[in-house]
Amino acid sequence: MIQKTLYIVRHGQTELNRQGIVQGRGMDTDLNDEGRKQASLFFEAYQTIPFDKIYVSALKRTQQTVQKFIDSGIPYEKLSGLDELAWGIHEGQPSTTQNKAAFLQIMRDWLDGRLDSKFEGGESPNEVELREREALDIIMSHPEEKTVLICMHGRAMRLLLCILTNVPLTQMDTFPHQNLVLYKVIYDGEKFEIADFNNAEHLKQP
Image (cartoon, rainbow, N blue to C red):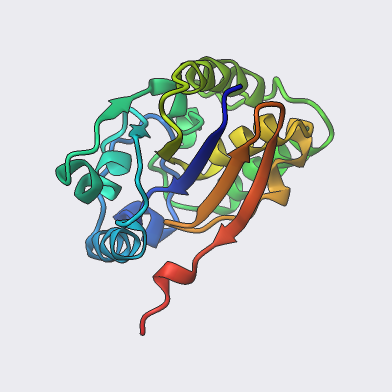
């Protein structure tokens, strides 16, 4: 029976996060100073966890977030299935009244079960679910990896948590997040259970 503990974190802060600008899958941004500080705090708090493997998305902000763990010798793998949802034409755009309204509308669509809705050039939750399930299959196909660190993105993380806990994607917003927040999920061989929900204790300065 496969048993596994997944430590799932969102990447540290980027400059676009700080400015409230949408990133998505099409923006390959770096961590800013605050993001690097968050990454260090997370490493300090969790460096003693015996991670067998690290999985990151294909976007460099996730690898930068867990680089200290990688540097300590833990093997890692990039899975594009863990990439952020693509927001299409809205990526990298400053917040305006028009695009705020567009985002509100698409969130309403998703909440109402219209999970194929997407922006021009973007992805729908249903499309992201397909690639996340492929990534999850890869992660779960290694029974020898008992303790795994996964670094990914806010919206994608919400969708993955729906998949893991077997709740409809329409409930994605029940999983809050901020930069470098942790969800610890335990797989007992039959089901996934969240053992640590939206934990940001490691980010609190002493």
